[in-house]
Length: 307
Image (cartoon, rainbow, N blue to C red; front, side):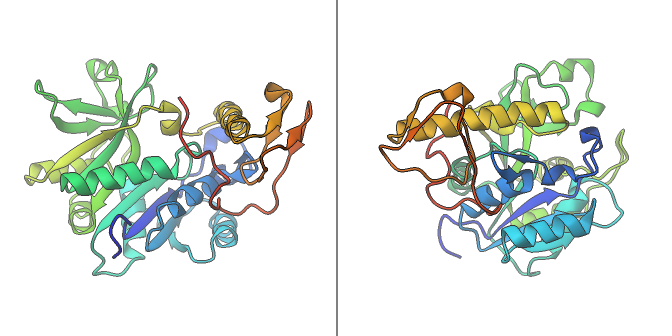
């Protein structure tokens, strides 16, 4: 495996997304001219991993066909009837070679502002620390719905708890689990075997792997993302619109800083796949659409994260 490249990225895209109230699977809803899962595949491919796996279940055939259109080299893995993100990760891992070693990154298909740069920082931090697991975290003003990070009096991570299982005191914690991880492949493979479904939802939670690793004396670290937009997931259409507005703001700002004149930024819409050259002038109320919904290539995403 080439240094600084993960062995694999597993994207969890099996959820039903019932709060979208739509016949279209959540991960196929679009912002910035690209589906949610398309954004996830683009972010994953930016790391140049050896393999990308997308785990599907709800409306399996539609999502799988779309993933293959996005990235013919991606591996589509099917989650069975066993519920939970731990089982989804397990199904993704089972689609990879049994002797796969190195770093495995796990991401979610519904966090469209997550960038390749942040995933690369997570992967690099994981390797530099030599930890068995590294968790991407963020501190949110409103952490409701997110799993909380639990630390001891010296600031060391001692576990995580899902929002539904948290006490009132734990729900007041602001540091959350973003749902993205860097795992040592062997550690993940072994720990998943010990994850049960003894929780409020009766599901096998991926965060429970952290408790298994810690109980076995393993090393778990965290890596904080300051740009909290990257931690936000889409659960309903209001969040989809909110994140779409922010993504467009970032895209427009990127092109202005790259030498493009945009006369009316608040009323300009630019898809993430659109390419513009220095000196281009975009008039008021313009909408610039990209072509087919394919993953990002070099240059079609903002080069840096914006606050």
